[in-house]
Length: 238
Image (cartoon, rainbow, N blue to C red; front, side, top):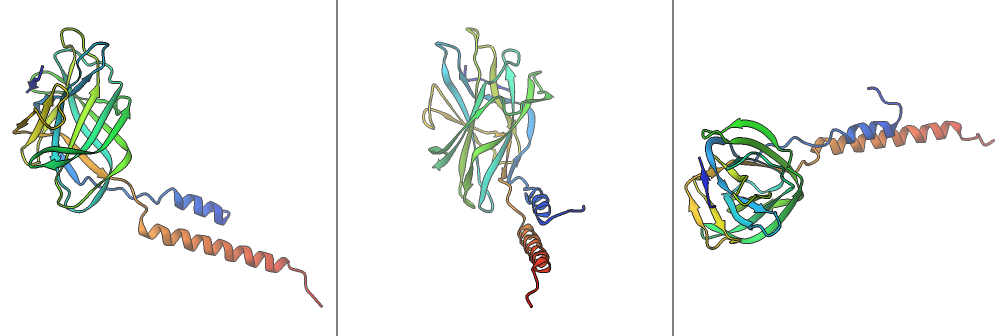
């Protein structure tokens, strides 16, 4: 079971509303490990009644060059030993590093649904590959230069023949190491692998600094115009 498969505006309020819609900066990934077609490492929570539960978990480690609040996670996975089947949810967890293996759980992120599952083709062995992406329920704060681990586990029932199984796809661009536990292991009772896994991490969007000035300026201009209009309408005192 522990398998490796190879305008114009009419008021100050309108101006403010329009500017508010363009304040999110487009952040770039701080970790990016592209997928390969060389297979995957099993990671799955078997949700069938009386099933195996979270029998395998795949992990990969990462560091960020500068501190970042991770808001979006994307990854690539594949189905093997059976056809693709509905995933009801994912669990994306972050862990501290413990001498080169996953250590203390720092944050757990339950994801409802299939995380925007989209087909991207077949791997070298003919298994169906898919991309996934989700915005975390809460951003994960990663400190610069500190090693962390991440796990990705789908909720996916199997039948008695272990059909289907899901694996986190092998990636590239990391440090050439990942980890796997089995039988509900949580960082112990597992083994290291000499492959990266495919994923990327992107910081949560933050307002662009210049937008605050624009918003403040638009608000002050609108207030000044309003005061001038009111002054013109004020009655003259003899």
